[in-house]
Image (cartoon, rainbow, N blue to C red; front, top):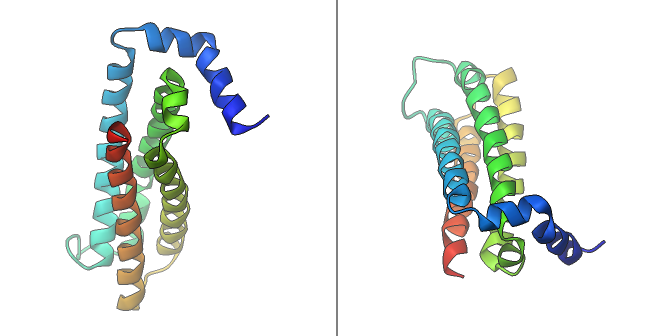
Length: 156
């Protein structure tokens, strides 16, 4: 089964039809998606700013990462579920959208990078400033790309 076949099947599924025909379903799902995004983005920003030594300097990096991990993981799960529901509501629109494809590629890269960086940071204290700054810079760059690509979906 190709990706096109999968997206077509999703569009014809009963859930896809219900979401597409509903007046408020997409809006409600998007609100929850954006709230989860705000929580996720805030947690990522706090960790990355800590890596840059901007804010939360009295706390060890490993503690900041450990304390924010539940928010990162929980909001990521909610974003993934609501994101899938948004795609189900109009899969062919997303299938042909280059911004959506870019967002998904960057999203996968961002999740992998974020959790790898966090796993390392939670176990050890980064003593080298350059490593912290590179990790934070990579993270912020990827997540900014995800946000810009996500915003572009509606315009392409």
